[in-house]
Image 1 (cartoon, rainbow, N blue to C red):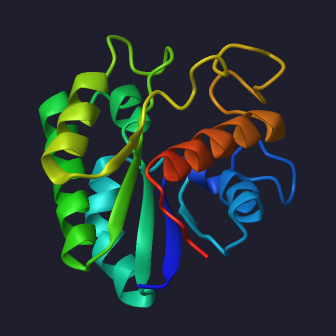
Image 2 (cartoon, rainbow, N blue to C red; image 1 turned 180 degrees about the horizontal axis):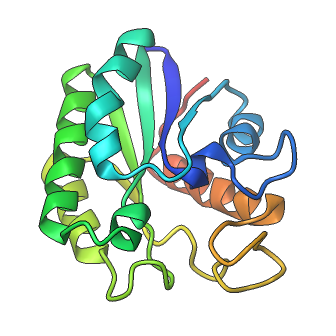
Length: 174
């Protein structure tokens, strides 16, 4: 594929960012490639399962950056269901021949952490994984726009973590 898609919840949609400073927009500038923003504020893994196929039909994805799970916790969706839904989304993306990069979310949002599940999925499906993207951002007023969402600076830090992960794996997207 040729497209890079950011798929997920409000962290992808850019809630809390100034205009032009969402995570996909900042990541696009840092990588020098366009990134399609398919973020929906409030999305759960249930929503992701419902729309992933229609999103993939619209594009020719090379890489899908996946950020879902935080709203599942907030809506008390069972962890087993969240993991099953994420596995379905990953399999669906990989069936298109696309790479997946999972953004792990913890940092106070997901109480006991969903780290083990994210790590298991990344290992099982051989995806890239950026652990706890909100580490040292969540709760720090310098990087947060509200109690849940980063501000433009916080999104920039997340973008840096994604760039670092891609470079570590020697993935070039230009």
